[in-house]
Image 1 (spheres, rainbow, N blue to C red):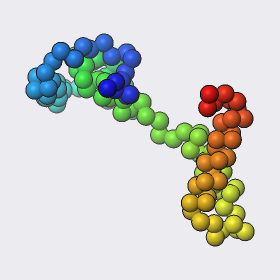
Image 2 (cartoon, helix red, strand yellow; image 1 turned 120 degrees about the vertical axis):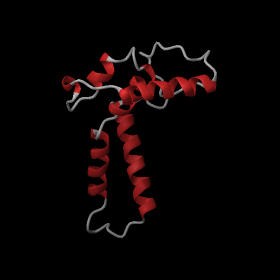
Image 3 (cartoon, one colour; image 1 turned 45 degrees about the vertical axis):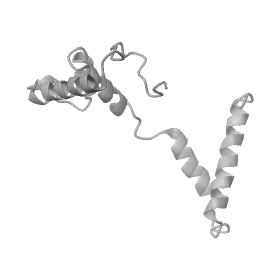
Amino acid sequence: MQDKFADPDDNSDTDDIGPIAMITFKNDELERYLRMNIEDIYKQSNPLKFWHDHQSKFPGLSLLARRLFSIRITSAGVEGQFSLAGLTITQRRSSLDPDRVNDVLFVRSRQNALDSKPDFFL
């Protein structure tokens, strides 16, 4: 089964390492990182610079950091859904069943997707 979160930039080939050796490898990498004295230039708000510069020394932790720190805090899509929900649930519609609200929001989002990309479901 292919990892759907696989990093296309990850060149490390760990497929031929057994599971016990992989755990030991990862633990050794973590121990080396924890014992390391981090320079002041890396003590900043963006940790990705550190992990980019130390990618060869900590390949597993670097991959994990890229996956974790690249997650967006918010997105316009979520904000749009909240806005749409606010327009759907008005004072006159305040007693709508939550499942009904979900259905309305789902249909509207699919309609918006079809309006912007007519071949969305093809």
